[in-house]
Length: 440
Image 1 (cartoon, rainbow, N blue to C red):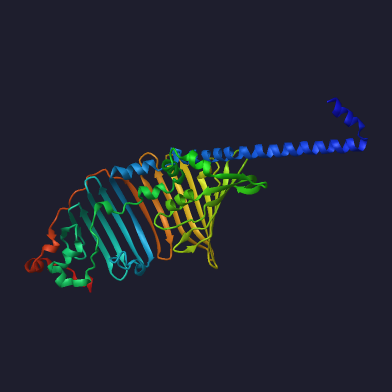
Image 2: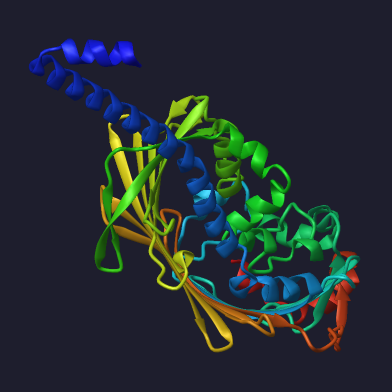
């Protein structure tokens, strides 16, 4: 220490000043670098807490679809509503649904009852079909038999086996009379295939985060260790209910495994690959660790074509971030650029949960594709949905209500004819009241 003191005293005043400045600069740089490393070490836990907070909100049962799931899983279901078809392109669908008639400018009102455990289903449907007129269809179906009555064709109930419907028809005497004029579906009728709206699988897609936690239970920490997190030096202003707030920006590198799960979840029927090892994601967070925007950039590939995609998801709920979500989706394909805007809003009113969803294309042309209003009773699970569709293959609107069936389904009472077992004499008796004009 004395040696250093003597050396210091021998230096000129100028050198002492420069020495102090240099030492101070080194000290400041050391502290700055140290703080930088310390700050970076805190960022990953901070992001983890923000994501955990968001996941806990998503998993909150207050806003879940459990009451509706219970109605569906109970198996005793009553459903009714109507559908208007302004346009339905059956030519595109005829490969899969060859039995469809052209329902353009048509409508349908229906009542449907199902006892799934017993394998029983009944329905009453009123079709207003363009160029054909009105058709009233009553049906009663079990695992073994199907009973149908169409008053415009015949007043009797028509009975047949639910299996190999088309083969039964083609082997029957009725085929010799009507031939191909009567379109019969290839597939069998099955109570299990009865179109109950909505299915549990479809509803679970709304609770994506809760489903993710369920599927990755026990693997969250292992997955989190693979994710790389870096805090950006600049902040970004995010609009939150009319007020702009400065948010910290965190850049995450996600493993492809996580992104492929996400794409497979929301697009389960489409084969998509992401060949990059990492996918970029940005989180925009306020000082209270609330995530107000999530941005993702990826390049999914389908059938050899790459679609550069950007997803901006704004969380704008006041009491709960997930109560109001707005998504901007940008997709590029060669020289074409398509932009979509999705609005999702959820409200809790007294004993009911209400959800509003709108999907619009905003580029190259502004078109609202889907608009739905969904209401669910939080105690009974009774649900009601109103919708409008304006898609390339279909333009339609309708209403549907689903609730628990309280009554037992009974077999129809009246004259029953085994349709495909008629011989010549039986057919002659049956044909006295048969309306052949419908097939002309």
